[in-house]
Structures are given as structure tokens and as C-alpha cells.
Image 1 (cartoon, rainbow, N blue to C red):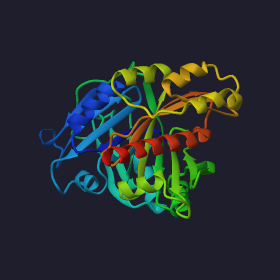
Image 2 (image 1 turned 30 degrees about the vertical axis):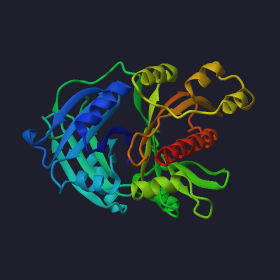
Image 3 (image 1 turned 45 degrees about the vertical axis):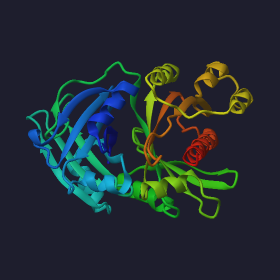
Image 4 (image 1 turned 60 degrees about the vertical axis):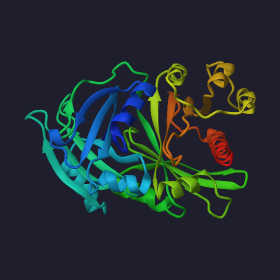
Length: 357
């Protein structure tokens, strides 16, 4: 199964128009299309946003029987579908089902001759749909019943989806990784056990051969004190996408611009930056500038990377986003997980204090 890209991400949301407006205002996405009953969509309305190689489809159910309605009842707003770009969606679907995937939708072709597009779906992690997409040529139709209104933001600061971080209940990590290996042909590239104070979690990374589809899969250690992964699984109602990471070529500008537009990022303690030069050496960016923007840094054997995480605005404090810049580094900032973990704990403590007056 040759996976070439993350074709698109579909979020099931309570208010597609409102969510689209916030993503455009906050991160510079541009409206690229709409669909609803008037275009042939049944039981839902959708808004398509684009920015460079990122396509986000925001879908709101208009019928209680639509899959998005069921998802919202169970999880609240979140990632319901990950579109996977492949050379042949028919073949990918058949291969995945033969290897044990649960089918969701058989192959469907649409579009004009010479620009045909094929969709076919199976279940992936939890109840997240993985939609195989093959396109005969760039610039063809995006999806059935989506009226496209523009090409999106080609000059935006966000380039493509870098990876998905997903949380699973305790005891499901190994089986989830095995299924991604056996069904989708992904390769395990990294694993780590992380201990922060009295809490702990285990993480494994699986990635396509093209390195364009990557999942960081995390489970809590329930023998230790409950932490943010336990809280995500409980609040989300099971396994799901904790955050989507967007690749940028200039994280400092992206953070400044997004912050000016109202995006709130997690803060990082000053002690983190005081220790950074001794931990990483020269990284090509002044540490005081990273500190002013709360950007994290890490190094692996291939280079340096920078990352930052947004606060979750989700009512359940589940889904959030990451911005990441890679200067050769191919890993995911494992040394920064402690800082992220602590930052999320601070946000949750602040939420608790606010609720308690």
C-alpha cells in the first residue's frame, strides 16, 4: 500500500461555519468550497478550507442519523476522518479489508474523465474513518457534492499535516500499532516510556514509507497517578486524535502571526530555556527569542526541530493543534514531552481553580 500524503482531514463539528471562520481568522486558512442538501450532500453541511497542502473539511450533521451526529454525541468536536492519498483507492481498500480492516464505504468514483477521483473507507483507530483517496490529476474535484469556490491559501504559513497524536485507553497501544503495521503497512519508528512525577505514559510512532502519514500513539499507565492522557480518554469517550501537527517553514513568524490573530499557546517555564543551551548546544535561533514566544526546541541525529502547542478551546479540553518546524530533524520532540505534559497540567489546574472560584 503506497501512501503518498494526508489528502485531507475531516472534522465533525457542531458548527461548521463558525469553526471555519475561527480557523481562517486564527491560522490563515481560506474558504475553498461548501456542500449541503442543495449540492447533494445528505444529512449534513460541509465547509472546505485549504492552505498549501492542507485540506480541512468541516462537517455538521443536519440529520440525527448522520455519522457526524453520532460522533458529536459521543466525543464532541474532533477528527472523524483522515483522508489518505494513495495511488489506487480500489486496491488499497481491497488490501486493507483483506488484512482485517472493517469496511465503512466501498470505492466510489466521481469527476470527469481524465480527472476521476476515488474514495473508499475503512475504520482505523477507534471510530476514526480512514478514507483512501486516489486522484487522476491535481486540481480535480475534491469530493462529491462539494461546490468548490477557490483554491485556498497558497502562500500561508502552514505547509502540510506533519503528524497526528492519538491517545488510546490503557492496554490498547500494542494492538493499535500492530493493526497499523499489518493493515496499512506502516512501520514502527520510535517508542518511549515517559515518566513525569507520579504519572507515566507509553508512546510508539508508526509511519508510512513515504514519511507523509505519521501517528504518535500514546497510552496512559494506569498503575501510576492519573494524568492528561487518562483525562483525554475519559473526556473524549475513548481513543481519538489528541492533536494535529501542522508543518511550517518559519515557526517564529507563524507563532507571532497566529498569536496576533488570537491563538493562545501553552506557556513554558523559564527554567526550560535556562537549561536549553546546555542540553542542545547551538540551534541557530536565539534562546531568548524562543523563550519570548514559548517555542520548544529539540535535536536528534539528523537535525533540529522547533514546536509549540495551542491551548485547547474544546469544551472537553481534548483536541488542540501543534505547529512544528523541522531543520533536518525527523523525530517528534520526545525531550519536550515533559514540558508539554507539565504545561497541559498547568492549564488543567487553572481550569479547575477557575471553576472552583
